[in-house]
Amino acid sequence: MEKDRIANRCHLLVVGGSAGSLDVIIQLLSGLRDDLPFPVVIVLHRRNDPDSMLSELFSAKTYHPVKEADEKEALLPGHIYIAPADYHLLIEKNKTLSLDFSEKVNYSRPSIDVTFETAAEAYGTGTVCLLLSGASSDGTDGLKAVKANGGTVIVQDPADAEVAYMPKQAIAGVTVDYIVNADQMAQLINSFSTS
Amino acid sequence: MIDDDEVDVLLNDLYETHGYDFNDYSRASLKRRINRLFILDKYPSFAEFRYKVKFDTSYLKRFVEEITVNVTEMFRDPAFYKTLRTEILPLLATYPLIRIWHAGCSTGEEVYSMAILLKEANLLHKSLLYATDNNPEVLQKGMEGIFPLAQMKQYSENYILSGGIKDFSGYYSAKYNRAKFDEELRKRVIFSTHNLVSDRSFNEFQLILCRNVLIYFEKDLQDKVFILFDQSLEKLGFLALGSKETLRFSAIAHKYKQHPKEKIWRKTA
Image 1: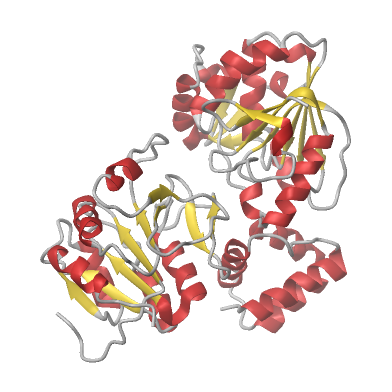
Image 2 (image 1 turned 120 degrees about the vertical axis):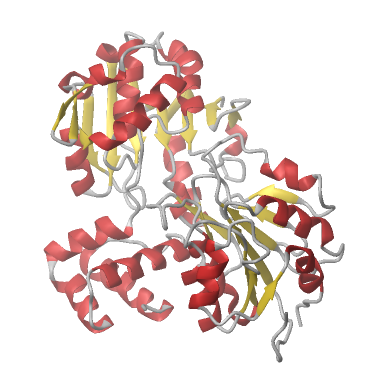
């Protein structure tokens, strides 16, 4: 499902997911093209488990380097960064990552809104944010900021999502550019370029 | 919304008028917190917000407290505390007087956690804990040792995971919805203001803890603070950082050896 005009421009992809999004992310990562010209940041709600195996799990599904985000780390094209458990992940204007242990937002830390909002400010029109399945209202405010800064918003089709609430909230609150099923996501992202 | 130029104006006012230097703080987080406060306190315009910060000293207090992150927990990262308990404290036990610095301690939850570890190792009586923060308001809370009762369930679980075998509720008395920690725990604690950005080393320690403070600083300021810690640490002393912080890329890294699992470094040279 595509809208008419979209300059498929992407300098940074941020993916936000909550309940029911893990398999969707795995499917997306395994379908990304090898010469992906922009970084990918993943913010996933999960239990506060310091020994999270997420990066190992994702690494097994893609040739792209996957790692848990370190603070002050520079974002590199083709690299995949995961927000660490129990920190907010922020994008700085100098295209580095920073962490923040402030109050939970939407009962969540990491919060998807925090990363979407700071990404929108740092990357402007080059920001692409993708919101997936979930039972939270996290993400919608962040997507508003992405639109306000001229970025691109993609939301998983609620009918395709394991938990429809989060994408539904987004579609009700934001002018979404694309509404896609899990099996269309990689193809859409692969069509994006940095120019 | 407050934009980047307005953030610069505020930071400049803070420095010029009040001497607070936030210029080397990580900008995205700082800007988010300034905007959060601007919305929370319902300012109609940036001009009024700026006026308040510049001229109303009681509001300045609130501003500084709200734009810095003061969120902290007891026994956060229980595995870290377990390592302190089983590996680090036994080494410190050999000193006649153990000096510990909690830099950027906020409301003191980690200081009380440390005091509990020391008490259980029978070391509290010969320890001195310096708990510092640049914000006197949060230190006052730390001195009182009163924390929300609702958090005790989580803290108790953390305590057990850290290797604690006592009844955690024995360390505080519950009243209404608050938990007041045992006075004995803070007998060996000195709460004092200290600004990591502008103040110097004030003592030598065997253990410095500074967890989840440096994430708010830009790289250059981090390096400055590492040098301050290095000057404040005895040879063979330990430096403990937050779970996502590292000494690795700093100028003092070569003098330190990291614990195989935890964010604890030992000064070897």
